[in-house]
Length: 213
Image 1 (cartoon, one colour):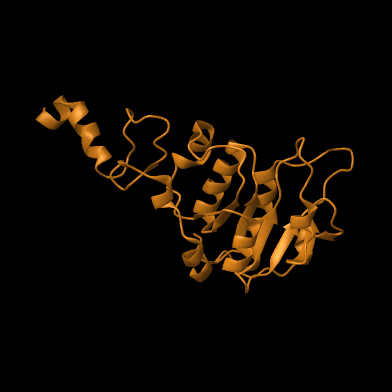
Image 2 (cartoon, rainbow, N blue to C red; image 1 turned 120 degrees about the vertical axis):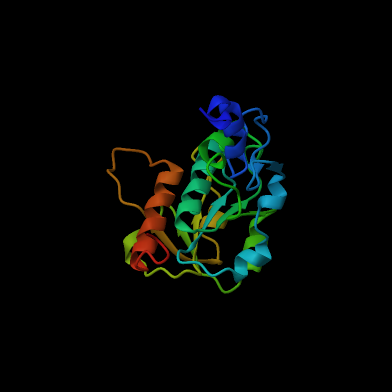
């Protein structure tokens, strides 16, 4: 029996060198580098300028004022596996260090595909050549009636709650198209990130799942 086999803790420590997260890190240490060491959320995010220049195989995804951390965490994971850039527009309904956000998405990867905007105008100004497609139950056109482009921004509003939907954002002059997902009329709505997943995969399908395996 080798010393390596006799000391399993030593073997675990070696695993951490290749990017595994150390179990004794606190829940607010959301993002780690390739060696499992914590880095700041801001350092891990993509700048608006870099996001605008990035070449992608899917449209960009935007959550305007998301309120539920688990939904945003799931969206971060969705964007990681599809190569999509996620834009989060403040105000957010949670702290980016929320443990529910970490459990839903950030244990899986870093936030290299996430951009944080202080307001919606910042998003519009940073991507002036992008077509904004708003997903809203008020639309008549189906999401499958759109021919998507990698430069598009798929816009989703806040999760249903006590705050009214921001129709100045979802139906403003900056919006090129409004589309909806079909559902049975007797049911209220789909989960936000379920909707985003359907939209992103339809757009990616149209582009031949470029970059996928």
